Length: 82
Image (tube, rainbow, N blue to C red):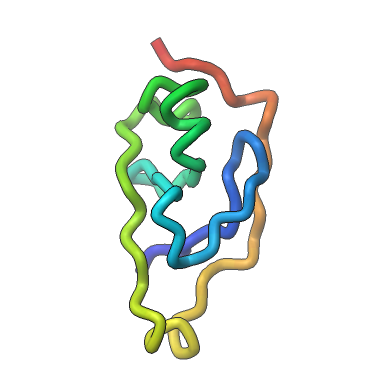
């Protein structure tokens, strides 16, 4: 099950579980669409993987399967991946 991390690793922007602005890589590194497109060029700075839209968990499942509360913020690691 996806962690649904609450924020962008680059800018620390809040990304609620239903946000259409959240993107992830296959390791669940989470970024806002703005950072993903303008700073990262669509690639994860951690693994080099593709960033895709994060699936949204149905609202009625959030109580039973809550999103993560762990914020990962690594602004120094946010750079374009070649």
